[in-house]
Image (cartoon, rainbow, N blue to C red):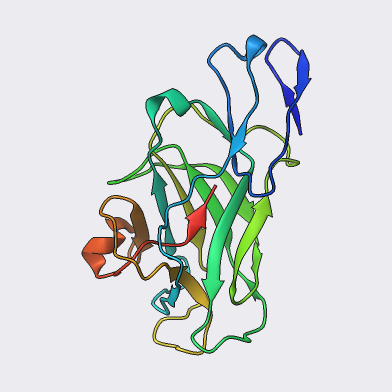
Length: 197
């Protein structure tokens, strides 16, 4: 991993296998780079939610301790699966990162178009080599998957998965047709979306 501060000085840090976010101190000229993973979910199980139309989004709101900010997002993990497994890979619309939370996270500050997701896995997308930095100065922030394929009511189709361990209010979002952000728990989602950064 290579960290560069605003003054152009560089330092080397240790990359962890399940890294997702890079802590950046306010004084980046003397920053120590450390990577860690922040996840929205707590349970080990997964349940499929075949409940989305084209253009809708599902995702997680992250609120970290104030001392953790600012952070740079390097990777995003999205839990994806189908009821019976074995579905072909799915080409979806986009992964979005927003610098806000509920009730409206605002406009995306980063979009990764056309992610390909594999059934039965937490699909990890490496954002570190992409041009520009995805820096979140303070929380909360939101990470979502936008659907290109409808799966509502189709129990054979792959979709976002949740952990089956109870839904934490304010930490799970749905952008639903006709274009309204909502707390997923209030919509009846019974657990937390499997998302990490």
